[in-house]
Structure formats: structure tokens, C-alpha cells
Amino acid sequence: MNEAEAHLARIADALERLSPPTQKADWRASPAYVWDGRNPRAVAALEAPALALLRGIEPQKALVTANVARLAAGHAAHDMLLWGSRGMGKSALLRASVKAAQTVNPGAVALVQVAPDALEGLAALFGELGAVARNFLVFIDDLGFAEGDSTGPRHLRSWLEGGVEARPGNVRLAVTSNRRVIVPRQASEQDDPINPRDAVDDKLALADRFGLSIGFHNCNQDDYLAIIAGYAEAYGLAFEEGDALEWSKRRGARSGRTAWQFVTELAGRAGKIL
Image 1 (tube, one colour):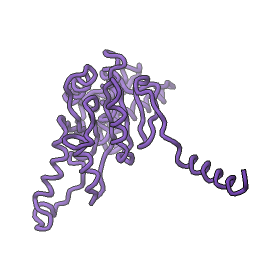
Image 2 (cartoon, one colour):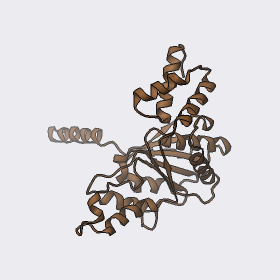
Image 3 (cartoon, helix red, strand yellow):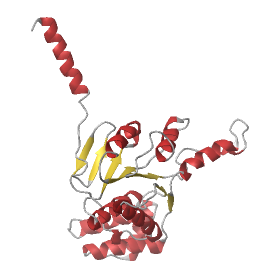
Image 4 (tube, rainbow, N blue to C red):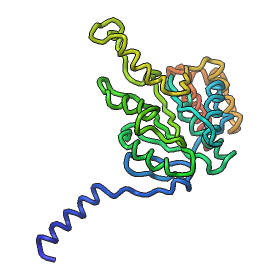
């Protein structure tokens, strides 16, 4: 090999390291996967709380678990949009529902989490999953589109229904978002002639593409205490209601996440691990 060929070989090696070839995954072997837009990464164990510990969201839990169970059984199932208050267990509920369905039907369904910045790779992901004899829940956590981004919402509508790159029949989408409409809305859209009501309707239509649109709201005091009581009972921890309420006041919120943080504090005080 002459000097020029050796130089070209070094360049090729460097480019290959910068852009590694797409990896092949065994889509039937693991309970969960992470998709980075190009390559899948298998997750050996799906971490999720027990469904019984997710309190204060009973109506939402009933809808999500039933829908995931249908998907696992190969029956008709909906795409899902879980929207609303932070820390109320949207993503935890999705993971727990898939784990519960896997217990009933081992190997029948897997969770595939997609990073919001990897949405451009969804078409390739659907191409791989559609060829596998297994059902999949593709999960996009905390999705939101920037002001002026028309491409992302348009692709999402196409994936949900009607487009040539729509998700295959063995795949359903589950999206969590802090807003029901996912995309930003401005008050001026209501009456600005440059932004007619059609713009608002178009944004709402994106949420309407999901068969299930489920709202999550900040919990009241009773629900907050019930969430803590459930965790405390499961982990053998004692607590005072006044202490729990003071914790939420200092945090400035009552939510499932705040409750879990208080339980973590209780466990630490008691010298236990969770």
C-alpha cells in the first residue's frame, strides 16, 4: 500500500468511527429498547413501579392499562396522548402498563422509547418493527415542538394515520406532553387576521389524531397523601401527614413526583434503600 492509499484508508477509518454502521437488533429478545434515530439499544429489564402503587390517577390508569393489554393481545388498540401536569405519573404509567402486559403475555409486546430529537428516524424504525411478529408500543416522552416548526407536527400526523409512512399495524404510538395541543399556541391566533381560527383548529387536530387523549392534573391533598401512604405501606415506612404536607409546601407542588421525593426522604431517614 502506497502513501496515498494509506492516507485514504485512515480517512475511511475515521469516518466510520464518526458514523458507525446501523446495528441490527433482535426485536423479539428484550422487553424494551431505546431508539436513537439510527440504532436500537436493547434494555434487559423494564424498570417500572407496580401498578398498585400508582394512586390518584385511577381513571387514567384504567384506560391506559386496558389499551396496552389489547395491543399485547393483538387486538385493536389506540395511539395515546397523555398530557397535563408534570410529575403525575404519565411516563411511569406507560412503563408499568407494558410491564404488566408482559407478565400476562410474555414476549407479546415491547416498549420502544424514542428521544424527541430522534423523530426523523421514526420512519426507519417503523420499517424494522413492521417486519417483526411482535407488538410494540413506541413511546415519545415529553414531546413538544418549537414555535414555527411545521415539519414535526406534519410528520406526526402522517405517522398516526393516512400517510405513506404511517406506523405499521403491530405498532402504536404513546406520547406524553405537558400540553394537550403539543405545539405552542398564541392568544393572537384567536383574532389576528394573519393567523385565522384555522391555525388553531389545525393544532388541535394533531391531538385529535390520537384515539385516546388522557389528561393528568395536579392532585389534591387527599390524593397526595394517599400516594405517599401507598408507597409507605409497600416499603415499610412510617410518616406524619403534617410532615408530608410541609414537604409539598416547600416544594411548591403536590404531585406524584413530589410524593415519591418525600418517600425517598423517609427512606433515607430510616436508613433504607428503595
